[in-house]
Image 1 (cartoon, rainbow, N blue to C red):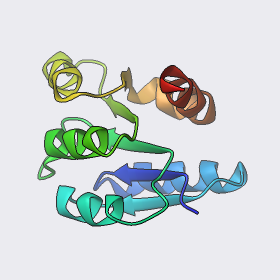
Image 2 (tube, rainbow, N blue to C red; image 1 turned 180 degrees about the horizontal axis):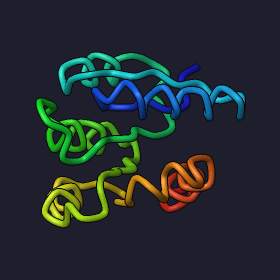
Image 3 (spheres, rainbow, N blue to C red; image 1 turned 45 degrees about the vertical axis):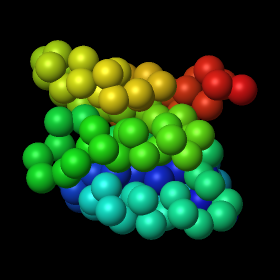
Image 4 (cartoon, rainbow, N blue to C red; image 1 turned 180 degrees about the vertical axis):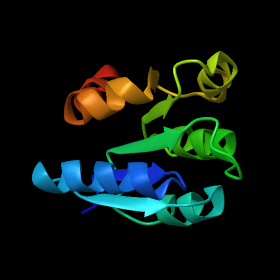
Amino acid sequence: MTDVVVLDRDLFFTTKIQATLRAAERGCQVVKSADDLAARLAQEPLPALVLVHCGAAGVAWEHGIALARAAGVPVLAYGPHVDIAAQTQARAAGATRVIANSKLAGDLIGQIDRTIGQIT
């Protein structure tokens, strides 16, 4: 079972996310496009959460947020703390929560659990 799907093209950051989730015995799948995310969301079981890098170049991340929310999956969006425009766009697209990269890196499991807990 995949607990978390990550929509991001940043190999460095996604590798860290995968390692942290693996250590916590949680599943993780990385997708690099909104189309790949749509294909994953068409499969059962749905992930518990979708992580989206807001502001990621070359990724239709706003569409990815909308797809996940339409499927009933909570979205934790993350990005640079200085990119206020992307944070605002992520909220407008329907992200459940939006946080800075540093918060995600510092407490990934806690941030995931708090986001999932917001909708249950």
